[in-house]
Image (cartoon, rainbow, N blue to C red; front, side, top):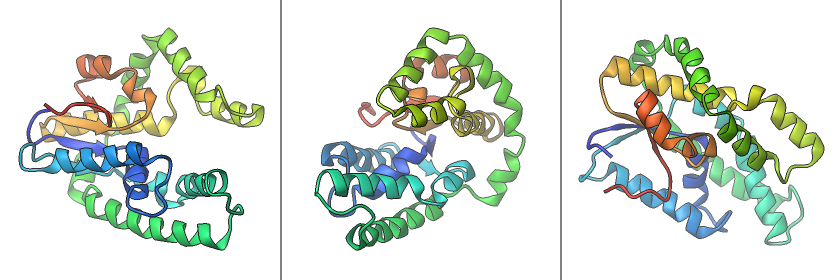
Length: 219
């Protein structure tokens, strides 16, 4: 990773970072602690990278549906609590405040939003990029839907036309490209989403955006 890069935080990273700070540890401590450590390493003096949260990610986590379901699932399956109980709601409220502070402190400013307002012009470029790898797209989709119930699988597939990543993921990539072009800086996306991670080398070579996963080495 190049020192001083601008790093967009995907929604799953915002959630993982938040869950790593609350009790009980949600979804496995190792997975979440890696996320928090990576954020610290990215922003320390050696790399001095700036972590950004885009309006797309902000809108995804604003209603906190994903956050609540992660917490509810863990507490029910691992701790044996009643679904949607008061104890779960308490943990959720704590997490909601934490993620709100994190996102607000890193949300891209109005001047930056203005500079990249034309980012959607890259959508066809991003679509064409993914269409170059139909087999890999199909594999990613299969893995994402493998363990879903039939109704949930169909709902997921409707959000992935022709196996393309969901629109918000593609738009986040568009924003990163526009940021790179307009701000003239090295830009990356910190994510744990296979729609990015499985295409890490290709996104870097074809689109000029670095994809960073929680298990990556920053050396």
